[in-house]
Amino acid sequence: MGFFSSQFSDVVEWEEFRDDMIFWKWTNREIKKGSKLFIRPGQDAIFINNGKIEGIFQDDGEYNIESEIIPFLSTLKGFRFGFNSGLRVEVLFVNTKEFTVKWGTKNPINIPSPTLPGGIPIRANGTFNFKVNDYISLIDNIAGVKRTYLVEDVKIRITSILDQLLMKWITKEGKDMFNLQSNAYEIAKGIQEDLDMEIMNNGMSITGFTIMSFNYPEEIQKMITKSASHGMIGDLGKYQQVSMTDGIASGKVKGGSTASDMTGMMMGMNVANEMMKNMRQQNQESNSQATTQTNQNIPSNNGKKPNFCPNCGEKATGANFCPNCGQKLA
Image (cartoon, rainbow, N blue to C red; front, side, top):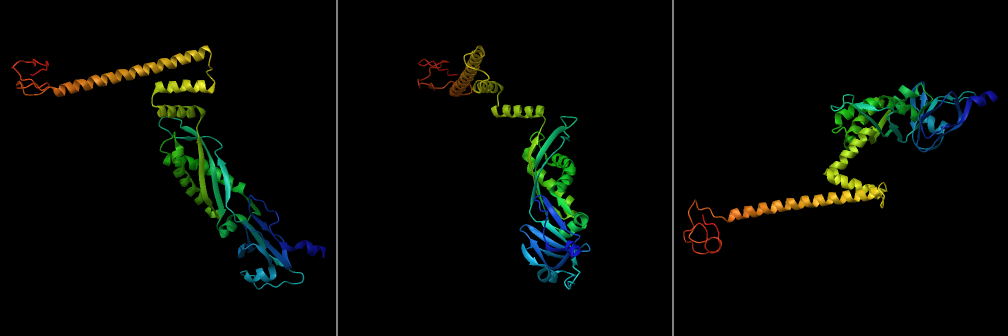
């Protein structure tokens, strides 16, 4: 009886469950009369005979294989247990959850750029999601030759082609090479479609792909940050003032020292210069407006002198200027 007890099984269940395991195959044993099948939440059990699917059971619970499973199999539904003979099948347990995987470029990707002959070296990172959606393809292409399959196996395959897809879709959808995050959604959508086509033959589907960030070399990142700062402030003089203010606030320029005094004096001079500049501009604008107003008050009579002064109303005597207020009459 020792021989038969080692060859026959009382319980069929996922014995080596791991959260990162996509499937596990119960194999190389015969199911004896009275055996039980255990399906836990988040699992499907697929009975396979000679590489063909006999039945798929998706509801979790405990089942009597003879009375609750065999009658629903395809070609084995008429199977009868013998005294020393059992049911020899494989049972594939599949993890039905959606897996989330972090990804990141191992090496910088050189994106072509007209401003840099060698391209812009960029790194990126994010996550992708996938799940099993086609058991026939899964068995035909993977489970038929493997006993287990892990998330890491999928990640290796995805990351092996991810650099090329990033280059393809960044070049296609990246409107601004120095602000790729603004087009991250379009880039990610294109990559997701390509990845889905890549693994669909293995019975899986990419259900999501996100790009969390693009990372530039330190020198380029400093240029981008500085350019953004200038753009927000809009004026180099103000940028210098803000820089000095930040220096004092951060403690890099400490009060009471010569450097602090010099900084304060420079800030005062800059502010004074800005005030003087604004005053000059205002005076120039006022003078310009006054000149325009005066010119508008001078009548245009095609060289003819008016009978009355347009300024004070005094009767004109034929002179070039009003004898009362001095207003020019012609």
